[in-house]
Image (tube, rainbow, N blue to C red; front, side, top):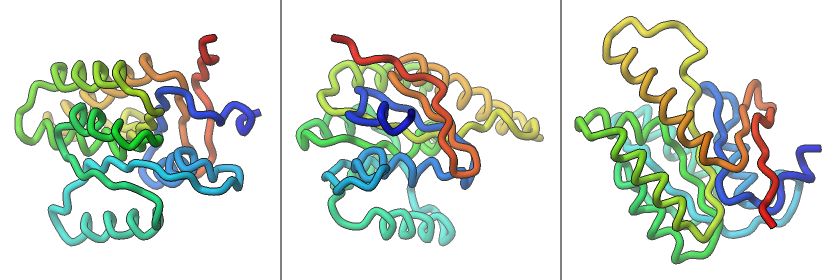
Length: 188
């Protein structure tokens, strides 16, 4: 049963899903320990979004309001490996929301995506706190019309595969329901 496997958090969890699938709220509850009605524990939230327009600013405010108190927020749109290193000082579970915006930010400035992903995965090896990533599954929809859109879709798929390979648990959200795709037993 999912609730038995949900605690304690494994070292690395990836929560995937489409737009408005419930992935962020599920991940927030997973990280704070309230998924099954427990008392909330403090956690670190690494936000990769930037408020580039009114719509995104509104989304960011809604996420902040939903989280409430008990979160330490680190806003870092591109230097995610460094942000993870800094989050370790808090000795609390870490939520990264989201890898999709991080990737978009990197592509926007022409960063080396493989190098950035390598750095992110290396930072996980040094992590002393459990980390939960949120990422969009963008490969299930229509083929993007533009070369940039297709490049982004392909890069997102590669990033998700690399993080999923490293993750101990991978959950796919669909219609607000979690489907566990991978659940590696803890090493003893």
